[in-house]
Image 1 (cartoon, helix red, strand yellow):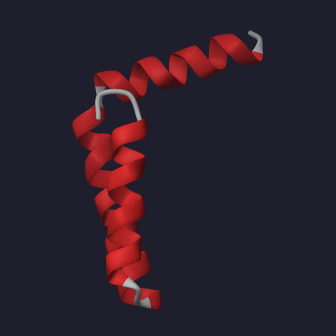
Image 2 (cartoon, one colour):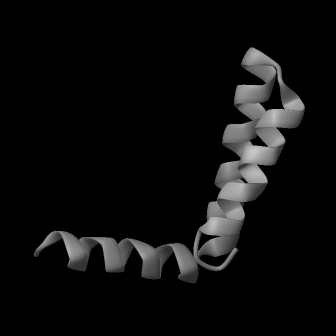
Image 3 (tube, helix red, strand yellow):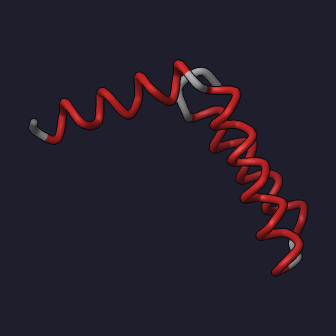
Length: 56
């Protein structure tokens, strides 16, 4: 299996399970914001990440 096949499989899974991926991004963002502050910046990055990921 080469890199492109792995990448495509990961993208397919992310699109298929985009709701779970979004929840994970939100959970990670909440943890980072709680731990380090900067809630507005963390939230902005989380939203941009969800927009970039397949299914977002």
